[in-house]
Length: 402
Image (tube, rainbow, N blue to C red; front, top):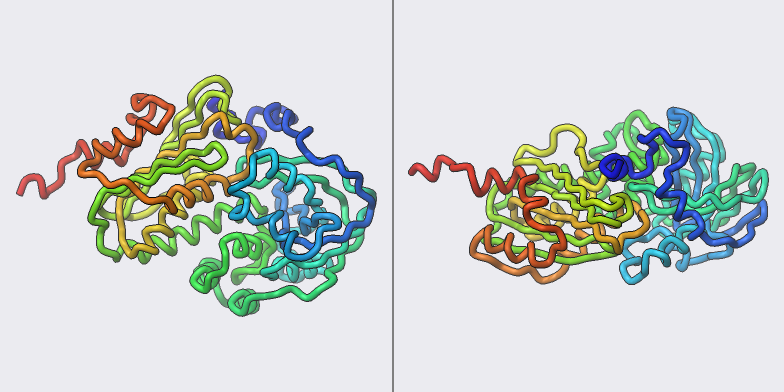
């Protein structure tokens, strides 16, 4: 069952009506009483569910009575590094989900409610929003392996945006061009310093691409990480190779990263170690791995969205350095990660590790020895899972015979 829980992360693969792991976290949510009319500044943020696809629920997330710049922190993972897990859950649980129902194809011809939601999603800054519900939203704290926690939800009767969104020029241009493929629009916006969170929001609410569709948020998050990662890799493959072995190490919210950068062609591997008593692991250690070589990833990762979330900061780092390298990464999830916060934790923890000064080594073996000192899991529990290390350490190349 533990292996299934780590793979499922609350998606219901076990067949139970409710995930027993997620159910125990629901009391963590705020208990503020709400009315059937709320006003606040959306961070900006929108959520699109996946149940019933292609008929989905979608709408803005709004923190009641919070207005102005302060609202931006409700959907800004980069600003949560100094918060505890409980603090993040309480912050997110005060966001109210506004549920409206659409067919995913409605993005091409939106009604007034969807159009207002799309306008909100365009903004770079919080947008004052007023929502009327059939009845007062009830607490329905949601946790997920991909999504950030979310709080109360209600069915919407009316939605108004009380101020003009602040729309970056490149966003306005890409959203207004229906002849640009989604991947090309993502590339243009990322190159113009539009954040991946903003890009994900646009993709999810159906504002990008030639044939526009609403995309469930959990899918758009991984799609954005993957598209941006592939875009960066296209450049990195032509950069000169890194000249030294380096190890970056860091931990955030109970997610410990060891990242070894090895001179060589572009390749990436992630070893994911769920320690006993981490959120999904139960009482045993669970280890999985996935990797890609110079040619890129084929098919969807068996590690799910966490693979693409960990790969993106690595590729950003190499792109900034204008170097290509073979990168071996370990993510050890400790018992300190006691409630699921979403895949952003993987992305931010890897970014944090890569922001710290690296250690340098003369050999891969020396680097592995150093990495193992900071890990709680024995080397023999994860080393045999690595395909990348096997190829680098045990397989001879043509140069060895010259």
